[in-house]
Length: 238
Image 1 (cartoon, rainbow, N blue to C red):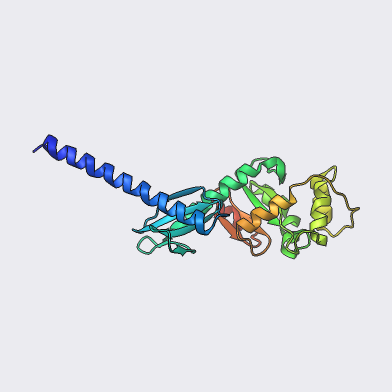
Image 2: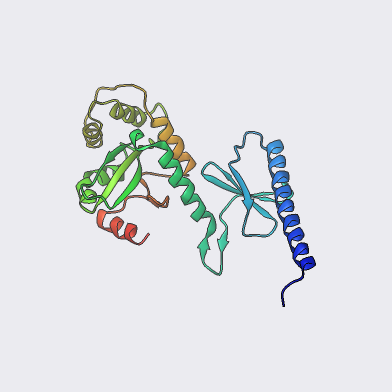
């Protein structure tokens, strides 16, 4: 039996009221956050998978806020039945976009001749495992893995590692300079306009705790050194 015109109208009105309520709650959350955390840059506010909880996207971070804007949760939302990290899936997308927005011209990329995959590697010139990864570059390239480097000197801005990163970027041949630096060769310090600070900020945003840190094209993170063949297998099933 077809629903009557009156029933259909009621359903439309209820749907509109529900949409209106969602927008009202979003506005309340945004208003409360703006008052309590004025420096927070809010990119989006959407309903989360949990009733009464809103998902707030800010850069490459995700927060959860109650519908009245009074309570904030930091952490990952897990779908227990599906055994799926819902937050991590969305963070991966945010990382992917952030790296794309940075631009390949702001990185040092070793390109595979027959590239199947591209990974972004946060590296510290003086890190032992970073040097090991770089010493095996030909193995990664042979597996069809292009490596896009971003600098993350763990000792911080102004440190010896930081100055080496700037020197490499300012070299006439960045690829050769990076290889020399990772082999421990002494280089005359250079300065120029460079993206090292932007790389470091991105690493902080990605919550990097060490180097090397590998980020895939899909935005997933593989912490630490991974041999070329094992990395290729992991990328193939990503």
